[in-house]
Picture: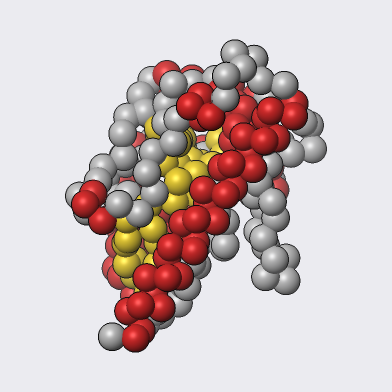
Length: 218
């Protein structure tokens, strides 16, 4: 699929949306490695995040202001209207048809990574139900195995709202091939690697909660 991103539009949305973001999506950024305060996303890379809200997409535009992230997005968003579908594509969105069970979105993501761009994945695939998050799906692993681009894990607490702070922690880069000796991993191996990535996400969550608890005690 051809990249339909309109970079001037992405920049316009970021700039015009900045005043709202200041009050509704004020980020407080932490790093798993405190020595990397001025960390910049490598090119290319895969940003891997938990999914808490539809606000996650614009929030990461705020956090990574100078980088266009091509997020994999479920088909339900593209089906809302023709204009909204055009807008999502123009902002760098990658269409994911969860009903078709094909790999078109993976192929699109690989092409973008080959061009040195940044791809974003919410491995849980959908928003939490009754506050309970879904487990990681293997798509993130299948993508990571097909590219040398590292994964940058990120965890956000989803504390969106006027007057609130949204806390996000950025982890160390992950090279999925470091965790397997299989050139062509089996289905079981893919599932094992997916669990490892989910554990990395859980480690970020635990570390963020630990730091927030320590700050409250001060």
